[in-house]
Image 1 (tube, rainbow, N blue to C red):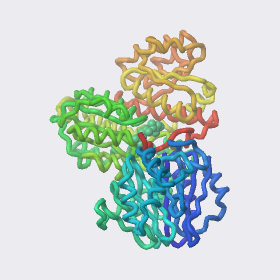
Image 2 (cartoon, rainbow, N blue to C red; image 1 turned 30 degrees about the vertical axis):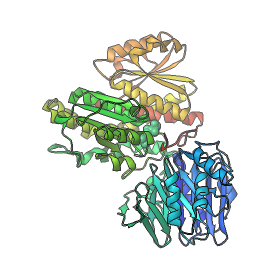
Image 3 (cartoon, helix red, strand yellow; image 1 turned 180 degrees about the vertical axis):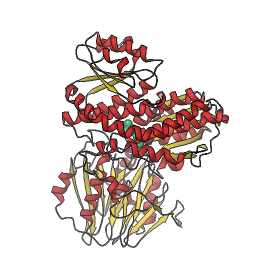
Image 4 (cartoon, rainbow, N blue to C red; image 1 turned 90 degrees about the vertical axis):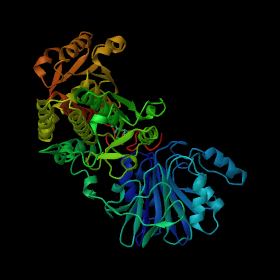
Length: 603
Ligand code: F6R
């Protein structure tokens, strides 16, 4: 989604803004622009397409030591020069960058049009600089407050005003924004990696607070216009975390980082006395239902969690796509634990699901990667996934670390409820402890095979991923990985469901990936593999017992021996690598697939 960066200090703003924008590219965008302030007013340069276009147009200009920049992911209006941000006010004394959606923009546009304002873009954003111009009374704080009070929807805003020297302004509601603190220079950004080369010290403004940012300081005002002290957050991320480290793509680097990320996520949470879930206030015995709401891959992680929690903690688990959750009138109570899973912690639908769950009296536990993100802050409890920054749009280590936390959570609930035997509990904890090392070896081993299989199957136009139980959940994630980066049409089906319609699509050389890791379901899945193979499909089998399915498959990926409940982690790694190499063979933009955004901050 849109990315924002802002700078004020002694250096020229343009190169710093362009560098910041390049570090936000991963969020997904289709145009970009900057606005720089100097004694001559504000100059805006913007361009449709990749940042390279903006670089061409800027050269060394505009000159000035304060500025704001933006990468736009189009929502209102086509991705073109006119709709790209920053947007000027009519008299060009204001320039604004925005992430989010102003829901009442049509009403405000009419209001402003009646008062003589002419709009140059189709965006919802352009009403903001126009409102600022309309309300401007010489006092910027009052002007911003009057403007803010008119806005409905979500926003992170960077505001530049001509004649304010080195000052610029920022505020947010339901969209992410951080303020970076330097020495004699200060920054804003949609997320920390954009400015990590300059600072690791951040202020995170709360909803509707207004920040005045100058080279020598940042002043934050609360909703009542009172100046407030903000806590300074020191990030433990380094700029190197956001570099490719010799890998061809961030996605490949992040696939390889999974063992370390999983280890970091679980190691101090498994103690000699059992599981310790940070400071989470959890009593499994008092919970009567778990609801998991999330989007995309995080939802798929929730699906794996559902099988695990139901099996071991004997609690009913409902899983919802967060975008559906709040509109289905969910039945929640204080004994229901709602779990929101999100890598970014900023996904608009997941945040809305969290608020809905709280409104209905449910306790909310968030499983989140980005520290201090909106979801982390609003949940009653948080378990961080500790995957480190994930730059590739397609999640990999974000997903597997979510699985790791869901396993710990499920096991703790099972322990609290007395639904797991000591033997099973120890076996699962033991398997979890060895998971990072096993995963490390597996990724090294399976990499060459994934490359070979990609070389063989990359021309496929469709792919079907089938499995039963948690293998079906793993299939959902495998299909998403393949389609989002290779653009091959891919679907996941519960293996037993295929013959209720979808099997009619299977013909000679259709690609099917059959996942069969669960002993009690293996024979059933094998029958489904036979059904598609007898209709001409080419089958890649995936199993921890490869011999049991080899005769019915064209190729088999062998998973290591592990506890049956943990196989989705290995399946994920194998399918991530397969998707990666297929996409590489087809020549896609792997880290930034078309139309996608890393952090989906609009509904
Ligand atoms: C797919 C992917 C997305 C995200 C989804 C939720 O590879 O990354 O499907 O999983 O957009 O994002 P978060 O986890 O940030 O809430």
